[in-house]
Length: 341
Image 1: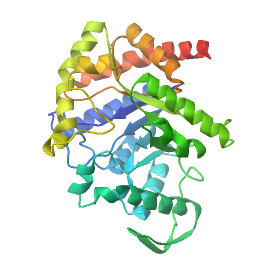
Image 2: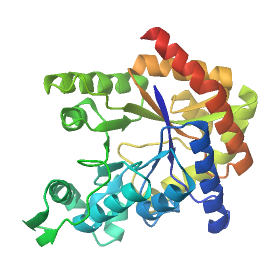
Image 3: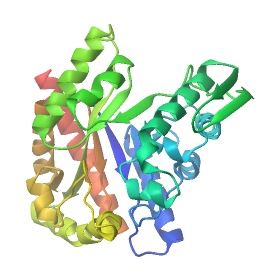
Image 4: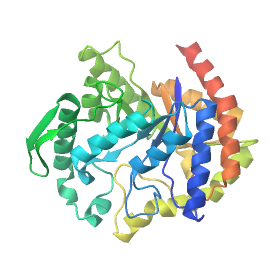
């Protein structure tokens, strides 16, 4: 059982330099407290992310942490020249001392791609072409491709990652059918949604991995939850209620501008609704440990990714919540999972 972190780093209202320093201090805290991996999203032209360049942010984190693994979740492949992204992955793997991992995807928001001048209708094809090119760079010394979107002419893959043949990969899944490729290729996955759907995803993943002869591998099957651990249940809920409205406005702003709604990542405007849906877990350490242990068991999970800070949540209160989670919740969930196993 492992525990990770997911941070959108949405706009909080603080000066960006101050917000960045606060987040870097939290990364140091995650590192000291024994979290497995730090994950982040990639978003453009929206207050949902103040760190639109994952590679730049990961480079900074690599110098402020020692053990924490680092993972963009996900790189939006349609926005990158594949060879350039391959080189950045190699650099980050060496800068971090072999702690780098990466997720791949085409992007959840067509509006962000369109704003960058990328035809969102072609995103799936661009994603597939970019990934195939990056994969060849990991496995070949010279790469020549003639694609619809990118071409390489005797590109010399001079750089290679520290972790061979490549750093661990991640894929975000939304349904049982979407786990077939990652399961058959030993790729780690993360999902959200109701626990019943999460269980369908984890069961399908293990079935597909076994069919591919990978039942002895140990990929991570994770779920993302917004988590607040307070001294009391009331304190945790109040903190969430204060911080969530800003995060929600950051999340929905671009969709509202275009008169559309998210397809697979809908969120409610009120924090209490988020808790009721089980996408958020807030309470004392005892409360959070009980709810999370139940979700891990029912979901068939071996990894929990917590979003511990969002919106206007004060830095000091976020740090206190994270400490309570690491010191009290993580051991309790691990113990419950060991008994269930």
